Length: 89
Ligand SMILES: Cc1cc2nc3c(=O)[nH]c(=O)nc-3n(C[C@H](O)[C@H](O)[C@H](O)COP(=O)(O)OP(=O)(O)OC[C@H]3O[C@@H](n4cnc5c(N)ncnc54)[C@H](O)[C@@H]3O)c2cc1C
Image (cartoon, rainbow, N blue to C red):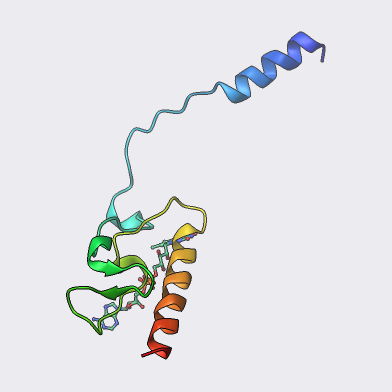
């Protein structure tokens, strides 16, 4: 391919707009948005400010990430944070 053809090929690959026309609905959903407000949580321990002694981890909190492992990471990291906080109780 000459340079102009390569550039056209790259342009077509990069500038290829795909419009989102809808979602598959709840049965195909991979993460739930919403949940317990972080303002009601101690961010260092994930203990409730409203109900001391009650801890939360994972998706029950109002934390959600893009697809790509961020939600697993949050579930594991928040679970670890709660476990560490409970060990100090
Ligand atoms: C199809 C699918 C694909 C996904 N793919 C990815 C991915 O590739 N990467 C990524 O990062 N995230 C992915 N996620 C999101 C990720 O799985 C979740 O964010 C994560 O598992 C949340 O962890 P969690 O411990 O908060 O909740 P959960 O994993 O939902 O655990 C909650 C547990 O509580 C139990 N439970 C519920 N009610 C009660 C009760 N009353 N009594 C006792 N137990 C109860 C449930 O049975 C469940 O075992 C995916 C989710 C789905 C649905």
